[in-house]
Amino acid sequence: MTRRKRRKIAAIIRVGVLLILPAVTAAGAKGISEIGNIFSEAANLSVEKKPTSSVSTEKKGQSPYSSNFIADPEDILSGSIILSKGYGISEETAEKSSVVNLPSPLEMISDNPGEKPYPAENEWTAGGSIVRTTYGKYSNGSVFDLEKGGQVNNKTTVPNETLIKESNYLPHFTISDTSEPQVLLYHTHTTESFEPYVRENYDANFNYRTTDETKNMLMVGDAIQAELEAQGIGVIHVRTIHDYPSYNGSYARSRESILPVLEQYPSIKVALDIHRDAISGEGIAYQPYIEINGKEAAQIMIISGCDDGTLGMPEYMKNFHFASNLQQKLESDNPGFTRPILFDYRHYNQDLTTGSLLIEVGSHGNTLEQAQYAGQLFGRSLGELLNSMKK
Image (cartoon, rainbow, N blue to C red; front, side):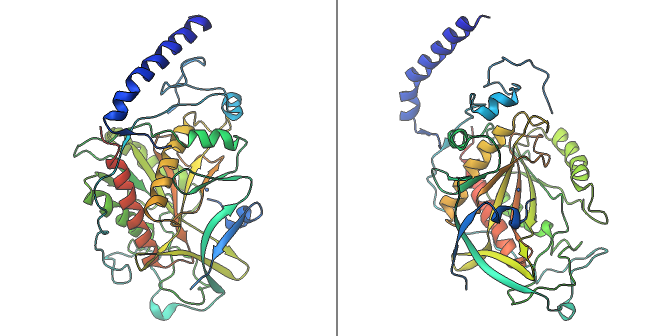
């Protein structure tokens, strides 16, 4: 097909869209416009701190709106194409419900805490200082605001102007009324753990990792799962430990765990790798938190990977579309809950779906209860977003 013919067809499509747009609008349709240490970000960002208390073989030239389109990386980085506009989101009308009532992680006792149990209360020692802080809006040329709340920290050569435009596009999947699972939760660094409660010093002898599923990332995943299932969203929660006894190779092992699940359940649209960050300085562990509805929650961060042409993620921008919609939903529901989306050259198994993201829930300076509550708030907002995307 000649370029002229392609342009002619594109023009016809645009006219058709303009003709049906008023009808769609009248019907009520509505479109809505990484594991990095804090030191690497601090060198490039200033932040207001509030007071504390599979790859296709299709050829290039195919329509960029096709799901198996592979663009030239130079075209993507130059901002000359947009990968896809995605599907729809309906306007919310229901009142927000409270989060599911869960027992405190401190009250939960594991039947099998594993080879690396969480320290008993009399085993904690005093180390460096814990600094409680709430991260506000970042101010730097690499960071930009999203239309409906939240920010993006762009660590790539993709122009901010391109990402701002992309952030307004809708996700590339819809959710169905089905008993089949549509969300996959897993943990590449399953044993990551937290402080037992708010205190002034952290334990220098504890590396904040445990095989006790009531005190590690499985506990946070359980909180997210409970909220999603309360809203009728089916969830598969992979409980395999991928980072113990060996930390190296964790991402390869988590990939081996989730590939069979995705194959067995093609209904899964969203795959979230739930982690916690490690924000620290010399003799300091940070506790990024925010008070929401009278209760403290760990602040969270979404990581959306970008492909420089070497990472095998030709559809990475579709993950970013989902990340942007999710970030705006999280911030609309609970302003200040999130840190900026980290958009960087990272893989993190985000080639497996167009709803694949990594979620950092707090840091090792946060408490178990702050992390659990953050998981609940995240799960509630995610569930509402997904339900607004039903066919």
